[in-house]
Image 1 (spheres, rainbow, N blue to C red):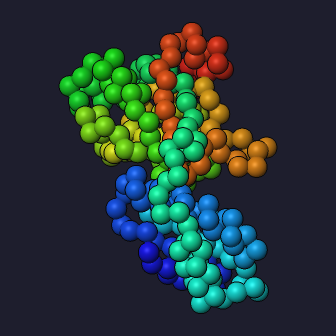
Image 2: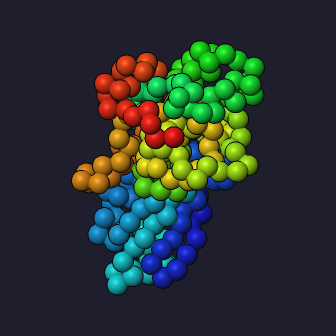
Length: 230
């Protein structure tokens, strides 16, 4: 673990330089411990792949004091996940089809697999939420099966519709709102990934697990999905 100061009210706690489930678990446990033990000092926490950015009140402590408090808190934090059943798992329905997944055929060409095989591989595992960023509620999930891990596009699209499910190398993600983007889009979920009226804002949080459930066109529309946003 390494703690680096960013400015007079921010520091970053690093837990390594390799993206993995073990590192993500460390980030999750650290975030929970800091939020629980240092709420009187901390104004914001931003967990990422291998680190947690800690914003604190400079009127109550300085960079030396926060570093000491963080070391004490993290020394007391559990060293392993208490139980995988304690991890929040979110299931998202996805309509995998070229009508809403314009890059599904490209992923098939890359992998040499048929549509059904790509869909089975993508929806056949759970993914950990490693980070949230780019836009509000945009969750970076990993790790994508290498058979379908097509790199991101060299030229991004000017608009990727809300709910689009994409692949970019070893990661997969859902676009919570319509934004530019270069991920390979293979489907779309009717689920809302962001709720401006909720306390947490995003449907998923760092450390959560996500599973995709393949649905057909009829269920997609019945759940509120739209086909006319490309």
